[in-house]
Length: 412
Image (tube, rainbow, N blue to C red; front, side, top):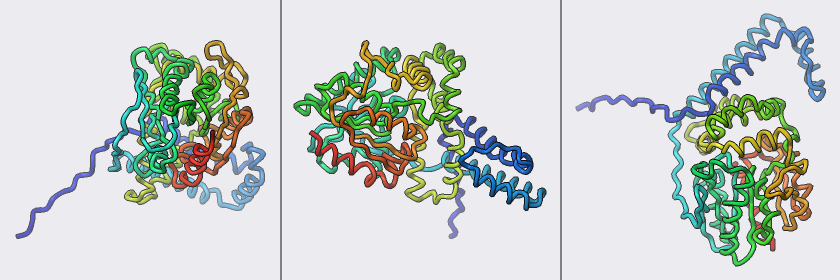
């Protein structure tokens, strides 16, 4: 007997990401179609190229001059169509991918309001890790195969405790950057120091590194060593023109803060998109060419899920960072105060480990290097990676995890 035929329905779209989807689609379309629109200008030598691209521009101009105008226009339009289609296909493949993060969450060793310390165990010295306020903490515990926290715990030389800030709720919705430093971060440090029987290392990632530098200065009796992973300090260093416009457009985002009492995730994501407007187009086009069952594809989806599962910033933190840090560069110019104290990394006596990813588009290397230059006892590691790839990429273990572990194990 012939078994009845069955029809396999495609999975329903589970994701509406990348967020904000409309902005990414518009940026991709404008970027690619802009190439076709610029072709007549390039043929007539009317494009002003960046001086660093002069040699390439001259070679391109010569090639354009030798080409048939109609044939070249058709070829460019075909490339535009193919690349835009590949980008859209990549987004569709991501939205329908079957990956889901499944990890056993470690116990909380400490809690305060929406914040908690996740204890990954291990028999070594307690170390507090502080991620950014912008995204969820599990970038340092992405999955079983890409977790700095679980790797460190398994090695047994340090006992990693990860600060999960949580989403702003209750009184936390009124917090500014100072409140996070003098509140949950300071109290978590006291807890970890009690576990360690004395001052303990503090490692901050991204914005968490900037907050950690402030905590190391303010609470030297609780911090024995300071690790900084892609931590921004000079917010005007290599900042893209788009990001400068966004940070300076208080008339656009301040009414949103007043209406919602926070910076919504999608508006926050639009700022990060401004740091590299073509990033989404490039990465989803590349994703469309991967084997969807490959570890590389699953890692991509895991990262995108994390990126798009952000938390809102409180109104005060958003105001301080966009206007104070990015707009006025208050940290680098000595105008960032906490409880009346100027935050000055030169006053941090503890030894420091500063990791600077050279391909970072979120925290430009020059921004992180400015912080390293101020620290009296800094060990600097420059690595050929991006902001996120540094901690979860294929080469993260050899490039960052091992050097960081060795430093943590050796530092007094």
